[in-house]
Image 1 (cartoon, one colour):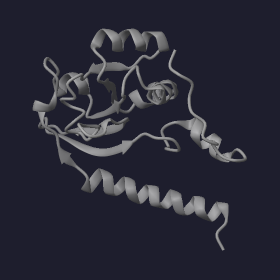
Image 2 (cartoon, helix red, strand yellow):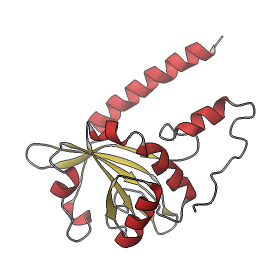
Image 3 (cartoon, one colour):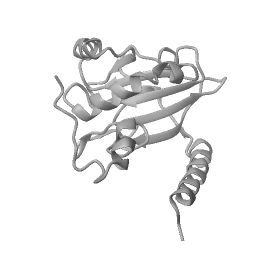
Length: 181
């Protein structure tokens, strides 16, 4: 019979297996043609070998705002290991003003044409924008590959409030974040 502890152990083991598969088998080459004008891989990687792109749907999305708000506290830890850039479709001045109003310290990339978000799978004509993350690696020859990808959504591992809500009687109970101020 399963117990909470045995299921947690199984989940941890499966997460480790998934991470190994993602970083080894998922490696897909990235194309510099996907970058918005004036942006280079060198600029995004900022002298690092690894890059965490946070795909954010922009100012209009209260869920994306919640994810970016909660990840802000993790930013120094993330940046101790990789370059971190938040990309959204908002025009650069809107993106910058919104980030300042939220106290975000992310490096920002405006992608209104979805030149990068589209090929990476975080935008398509039918469904529009999707939030999540792409993790990229640049080797010593400058070749860039994606080693991991995940979508954000209620209950995921990237936004701690959902884990706490899951432990409440009745779970998240259809809770939604407040409208973005």
